[in-house]
Amino acid sequence: MSITIPLIYSANVAPASTATSMAEKGSAIGAAVGSDILVVACIALGLLALSAFANVWVARRETRNAARLARSRAAGMHDLLRTMRMAESIAGIGVWQYDPKTGTQQWSDGLKRLFGIDPEEEFVEGDAETLLFANDIDLIGKVKERRAETDPYSLQFDIFGFDAVARSISVHACNLMDAQGDIHRVVAVVRDATEQVQRERELKSSREEAIHEAREARILAETDSLTGLANRRRVMAELDRMVIDARVTSMPLVLVMFDIDRFKRVNDTYGHPAGDEVLQQVARLAQSQARDNDLIGRVGGEEFVWIIPGGSDTMARMMSERLRQTISSSSGVGAVPNVTISVGYTSIQAGDTALSLFARADTALYDAKHSGRNQVRMAA
Image 1 (cartoon, one colour):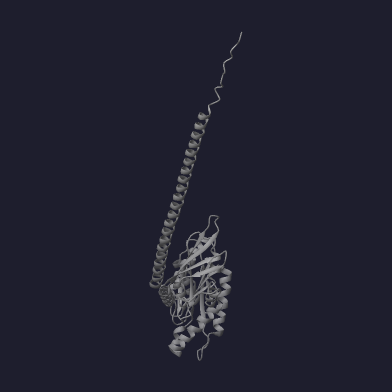
Image 2 (cartoon, one colour; image 1 turned 30 degrees about the vertical axis):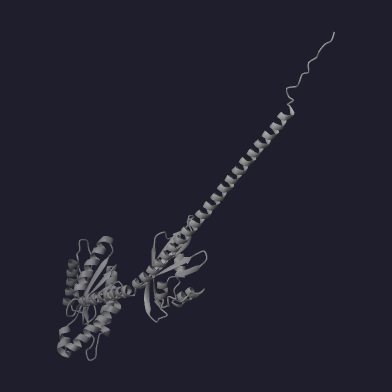
């Protein structure tokens, strides 16, 4: 018996014609894929080129804008500098800057002009210091002294410019601080203050002259023109003041009164000019006996007072006797022989006023004259 076995083909094995067809399809697909990649690459390159072009265009545009801005700023700065120069010239001011870290100075055209320097002249190192030194100005030293200042401050100097013009300049400075609180720059506006300073000096001179004239007038009003001693007006004013001081401080006070004995006889015998010389001599002798704080005055024709602050009765008696003896031995002038004086004195008491003290001393003087003259009496 015969057995027939059928021929079986694997499903994975294709006929030759089928394999050829599949190979052709694969080649077509590969070609298509390769073409797409190329297109994508071209597109990417194109985008990169476009981006680069855009960046270049933006950069060029920004460069042009920056250049225009720089030109605009330069023009603005030029206008600002021109305006500043014009303002400096009109206002007669200048700007000074100082860098304390480097020690360098910057002078504006206006500042050069104030010192008589051509604004167009360039400064070389040391010129600024030379100009200041020539005018005996230690501007940097003055600024350093004010380094702790946080508010603007002022300085003033007299200069003699290179144009042979004397000026007074006013410096208004300000310390500019950095974040650490250190001075990184000092900026100052310098102004020609010649006219202002001159007016102030004239005003000061006029004021001082007026004060001097007023003082002279007051002295004349309070001075006896013949003897140069205090007159009655000043004597009474000073006595008022000294009485008040003595009452407040409980310090002693003595008032001495004296007059020349028989002075009318001197005038009648030798004439009034000779009598005036005697009065002047007595005034000089009395003034020589007084202490620095004492006051000698002439309160009448031949009547004088001597105020002795801090003086005791004993001291007053001794000083009065010494004065009496000095005048009796040294008061002669020319043909006029020595004259004598009568003296009365008193000390301040509780409740005294200038008038009561004066009246009591005058009473003591009256007692001395009516007791024979040429003697000293103390008020009772």
